[in-house]
Image 1 (tube, each protein chain N blue to C red):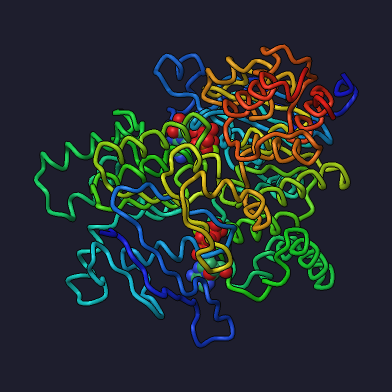
Image 2 (image 1 turned 120 degrees about the vertical axis):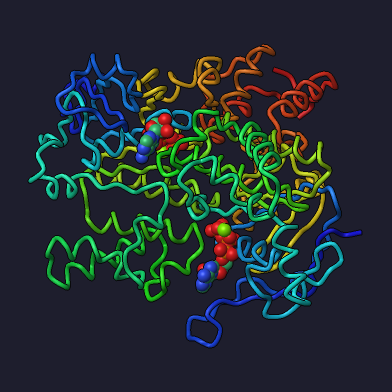
Length: 298
Length: 288
Ligand SMILES: Nc1ncnc2c1ncn2[C@@H]1O[C@H](COP(=O)(O)OP(=O)(O)OP(=O)(O)O)[C@@H](O)[C@H]1O
Ligand SMILES: Nc1ncnc2c1ncn2[C@@H]1O[C@H](COP(=O)(O)OP(=O)(O)OP(=O)(O)O)[C@@H](O)[C@H]1O
Ligand SMILES: [Mg+2]
Ligand SMILES: [Mg+2]
């Protein structure tokens, strides 16, 4: 695989995290013996430079905890995380870390800080001490990327759910991080809004060469990634290309997930004797069927 | 009789300021008892604004809202009655979670209704079971839950009030696929068992197709369509033009049709899709 000669920008080694209060100095074995529930459990994982990764898993499987660990919001109880060479335990390098890795949360309300949209987006770059012209340019291009430029003078808390989420994403874009973690950033958007954001995510990856990790419950969105990771009880239970991960429909369903409808339809039709290639997206499916079906008398 | 009715309902935010926005305009609706209505529409189309009128959280700028034949703004008493008759679960569940424990949170509504302790306990446990909130979670703080877990608790809290009309704003956002199916299944059961009216706001036509008896399409402040799922699906192309989504299989079949394969396009489940292709083969229209 080409990944092997790429650099791991996020590297987890034996990472465990529990939300329970642990007594000072308690060993991992003791913590487990006491029954502390591990939200992230002995995780070894590498995210490589320039990857586009989707993270799946049922509610409570540890996805948000994993993302917060990568961004230094949470620090592992056991094990270590190196992010662009920075150990997330190094408190004095937290600002440096956040400039490298930005995170967009599940609920946009928690990240809106100002009373005017453009001030909200400017908040990050202002804190980094950029000159006003630079800030202006970053804010404008970020707002245009999420198609909220015409709302720049509005009050964020008066926007609809989907509009707020786009402002929150612009706030992170304006920081120009190397890697962006999206925690269900499309959950509140309508289909058009979701496609926009997926397009932005792909653009950041394909054109701006950023590393992108997004958590989603939409299988159609996961199908657009280069790599899919499935979490269950704080562990990774499946990791590969979308085709590899979605090929085992029963296994995916057993952990409360699903496969894209197009993939499922492909599998059903293969049982009916159609010879079809791998199918992940709507376009794949239309093309495969159009190539396979012959219309009589046409 | 219609359980819920609106006449010329219009609302705008920030009235009298340069930022005035008309969020909904001239909406006439009549919803019969026992329907399961799905409300769909693009971001900012006015869905959340509309439903907040049904229990009097927002006051119409123009027009009327009738619950069970009663104009809710007639008096303080009718307004209060509408708060109990119409249970509303918000788009962002965090807004309605504030108690120390999950149990207390779910019990909050029934407590306000001055029910007996046993009745409150019965309702809390039933709502928790319905929404898949396990017993050991009841003693946790609602702030210590994952995103999807919070949503289940918020839904349980509204269900426990056993309102005449249960309204859920985006109940499946943030739920995993199995959780989505579970919640949709229980909403459907809830409606079938109780005969009560339910309304869900959703961005997902897939969800809607599975359980709704009626679909209300809001487009740019107005009620654009109201009808059965089949009636609405016949107009898939219009939905797509409004920026709405149809299930992936529907898109596949619209695409095949465009490529000259004579398939039906009112297909919205994978099973229907397979059956349609087998049927066409049996009729000798296509081969593979
Ligand atoms: N602040 C907290 N305090 C205590 N426990 C928590 C807290 N946040 C999450 N948990 C627990 O940790 C586990 C993992 O939660 P996490 O938020 O990482 O899940 P998730 O995969 O992001 O779920 P979702 O899809 O619902 O967002 C869950 O069992 C959850 O209840
Ligand atoms: N509190 C508010 N103050 C001012 N304008 C608002 C407020 N809430 C919503 N709006 C505006 O009213 C319009 C309708 O918003 P609403 O929240 O009803 O849409 P929605 O259909 O629920 O959208 P979404 O799918 O994103 O939740 C939008 O243009 C929005 O910007
Ligand atoms: Mg989460
Ligand atoms: Mg809304």
